[in-house]
Image 1 (cartoon, rainbow, N blue to C red):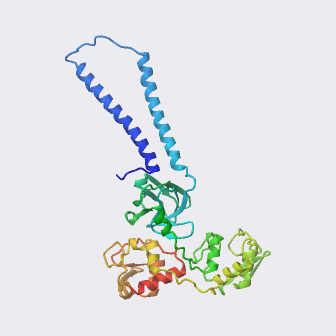
Image 2 (image 1 turned 90 degrees about the vertical axis):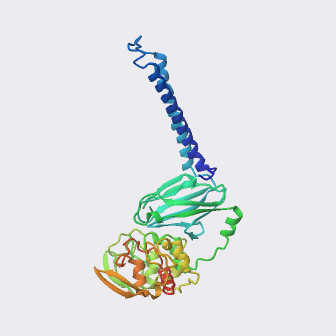
Length: 403
Ligand code: CUA
C-alpha cells in the first residue's frame, strides 16, 4: 500500500480502521468469553443447573444501549467522512473526464486534451465524470475514490495528491471486451513541473467557425459529422436542398450563405421539415457579425482547414487507440498499426471473405464503421471513431498510410 496521506484516502481509511477495529475487538471478546463459558460450565461438571436466572434489568439495558451507541458512532463517523468526499474544497482545479469504450480522456479548462490525468500536488482536483456510451467506473485505488460514469448524467469525484508520482486509474465497471485495458494514470507533478507542463498553450488550430460552434454549444444539438440529433446535422451543407416550413407553407430552398445567416439570426422563421422550433435566436450581442460569417464560411466549406498542428500520433494516443492497436508490430487484441499502409488484409464483408489492399478509403471505413468489415481473426469490439472531426480523421489516415 502506498503511503495514504492524501485527504480522501485518509477519510476512507479512518472509517475502515474504526469499524474494523471495533468489529475485531468484539469478535475477539465474544469468542474468548464463549470458549471460557463452554469450558467452565460444561455438562460433566454441572449436570444440573444450580439456579435459574430470569432477567437482569441492568445487563439487558447495557447490552441494548452499548451496541446501539457503537453502531451509531460508526454511522456518524462514516457519514461525516462521506460528506467530506462529496464536498469539493474551494479552489479545486476542475478537469473533465470522458469515458468511452475503452479509454479515458481528460480535458483541461483551457481545452487541452490528454489521455493521462496530469495534476499538481497539494491542490484539490475535481474530476467531472462523463460517459459517451455505456457505464464505466472511475477508480483510483491510491486515493480511495471510485465512481460510476453514466451516459447522460454528470458525476464527479475529487482528490488531492500530496506526493508526486504515478497512480493507477482503472475502469471498475465491466464495459465489454476492452474493459481490462481501460487503464491510465494520474501523473502528480510538483507545482513547478506542473507549471512547466501546462505552459505551452498552442493555439488549437481550429478554424474560427468551428471554435464559435463549440463555444456557443451549437454542437450539442447539431452534429458536424452527419449523425442524427435533435437538430439538423451541419455536415456538408453547401448546395444541399432543404425543405422548410415558413408561415405555414412548405418551401424548397438550396442551402447558401443567406439562408444560413437567417437560420442563425432568426431560426424561428423557417423551420426545417421534421424538426421542432426550439433553437434560440442568436443576435449580435451573442455572436458578432464576423463570427457568424466565420461559422457560415466554415459550414459551407470555405474555411481553409487551418490545422497544421494536428499531430496524428498524438490523436491516436489521446483517443486511446494505442491501447488496442500496437504501433511496434506486437500482437494485441487489434491489428497493429505497423506497416498498415502497405498491407493486404483479409476482411469479412456481408458474410464473405475478401482480401483487399489497405488504402485511404478502407481506413476511413475502418475508423467510422469498424464492425462492417472485420479483419479476419479479430473480434468486433472497436467503437466507431465518429467523435473525431473530419480533419482529425484525415490526419490519422495520412499518418497510418505512411506506417
Ligand atoms: Cu470501461 Cu470497464
